[in-house]
Length: 309
Image (cartoon, helix red, strand yellow):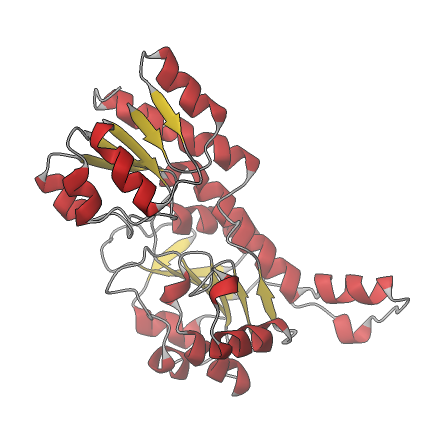
């Protein structure tokens, strides 16, 4: 039996059924419900909603594989699953273009005052001088993390005549015509825009902290379409208050369950929402219609190549 615990394109379930598998499609399943059902599952599909920890894995007596729709394996104890001979796969190839396009769209939107000026026109205001935009051509763009989404973002930016500096701790020899390998210090010193494309780990949590923001030289614009905990919200707000950065575009937050916010978290969110230099979207960068299909297609392709389907 294959257990699908997240919203997935219908083709995923249809393919499993066509291959003779029993399928449970339970996109709203809770952790406790998963714990009860996992003993019968041979395959498990997840996203970012449920933590697949040691308790779940120990209960998964028949589990052969875990498929992650999208990128980022931080909620899956991959190391422990491997000791149980459970194959863990993800599908970052499925939504990398969607994330890259969204990051670019956020950058161009806020740099050209599109949302602000459009709202003013709706109120009968025709304001031009105050809404003069800033072109990215000729600017230096820093990319932190040069994996699937970082590389896709760079490919889109290549048409804009920018200088691109990319830092990746675990990747080298990827520089080329449009991209230059760089150290973190160089990105912080020269970049006019910095975009984060890293997985969440102990190394990347709060990568953008007070030290990071204090090291910035050119008041860069910050983009985060990776994970909310990559940026320390307190440090981000201080950077905005002290003009360390020119603005920020966030598709992710440290806590995306707004109904659970503490008084401090509500104050932080309201500060960000009321700052015209800030643009926030609800973790939709990798969730385009095309990506919704492609993430499932990539999972199926990988399962077939490993003879797991």
